[in-house]
Image (cartoon, rainbow, N blue to C red; front, side, top):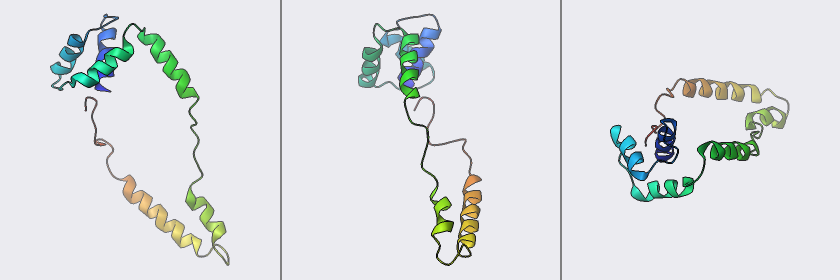
Length: 116
């Protein structure tokens, strides 16, 4: 991702076809080391292509990705409890309490950075 981001920064800066040395310079300016093999793969994939066209093609591919998910398991629990929903109510409260506790954690540092 860091290589693509640096490539896009170079393109935004006015260089339609940046070279590897320019990408290395951009990444080096923020203290990020460069793995030549990975940079080579990115450069090979983007060589001779218009960045706007690559982004547009990516958007089309992303449009076909399903965004829906399965219903939460907790929604099925009340109906599955034998003898009524009395047993399900305390379980739902416990799950709700657990969600509140875990929701208080900070999302600021999710274990990765822009240039990791």
